[in-house]
Amino acid sequence: MIGNRHAVLLSAPDVGHLEQEYVMAALRSGWVAPLGPEVDAFEREIADRVGVPHAVALSSGTAALHLALLGIGAGPGDAVVVPTLTFVATANAVAYTGATPVFADCDPATGNLDPALLSGLLAALSAEGVPVRAVLTVDLYGFCADYERILPICDHYGVPLVEDAAEALGSRHHGRPAGSYGAAAALSFNGNKIMTTSGGGMLLTADPGLAVRARHLATQARLPAEHYEHAEIGYNYRLSNLLAALGRAQLRRLDEMIERRRALRDAYAKILAHVEGVRLLGGDDPAANCWLTSIVVDPERAGWRARDLAAHLAERKVETRPLFKPMHLQPVFAGARTALSGAAELLFRDGLSLPSGSALGDSQIRRILDDVTEFLEGRG
Ligand SMILES: *Cc1c(COP(=O)(O)O)cnc(C)c1O
Image 1 (cartoon, rainbow, N blue to C red):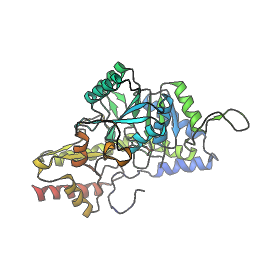
Image 2: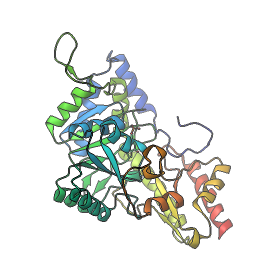
Image 3: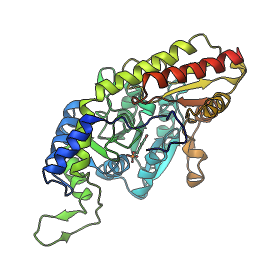
Image 4: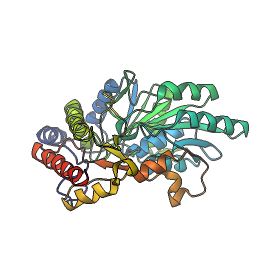
């Protein structure tokens, strides 16, 4: 659990009887030791769902990003372009490989990587002879990055794309599922994501060699010998069989959970429709999984700030959260190279994620909507 200070949480795990059944069945089967048939089945089912040939179940989304980057050869001396508006795991995974993140700003409409800035940045890096190993896109809050524009730019500069789809399982972009873009993609099953294994992730790829390599590195790079034989440094990154069982139950309920999040987003859209200076980040994209619904408040036009609504809701024990603090403002990445437009800083200042979880009950949802309406009427 995220903690119970708030009566209404931002995005709490949504688990019930089906999950209990699956986990108990896995326990009773005797496959408690790390790997087992649930892991194999979970990998197959996720691969089918996303329409990608290979899936490797891992202990976290961060591990999936790390192995995806290692799989395309990222290492010391390489630059990797990362959107500045993201969760720190995206940039950390780059740092784990020894490569250097270069932070690019976002499209203010979605918070996703700005294709025009990316194009200029790759031109500059290429002119300087900086080796760019990857463009690591993020599908922020469940809204796919603009792959129609980003992929041709990557192709033009011969730079592979890696997709951080940690927040976007179940989303689509022009009909194509999130997690199917690029040389490899990462999903997360952390407790607050669209579906959870309590903690876990998945690497997705069409490249069989990359999948084999990721599996090898994730199991301490153990070579097939009866004694323990290792020729390189590996990691302990595999997902346990019990958690894969939880994931399989969640996957069966994924569409229903997405529908609940979408209905909640629609309800927010309705009460905010005629409010001056307020918009939904990502707009009206029917193909998004609606993982988090976030608003952007223009303080001049609205006459109030996002943090005023946050304070109003906090008093009523309703949890909200600012958008991610951009990576280029984080002390840990001070001094990193950037290509900025100011969009991410504005979204950080003016954005707010509202409770979006699929586990919220009807009466909780009514309460949140009433609390928001009460705030708006007080300001109107
Ligand atoms: C959650 C998240 C991750 C990391 O996933 P974990 O499973 O928590 O390691 C990476 N990137 C983004 C954008 C995320 O939201």
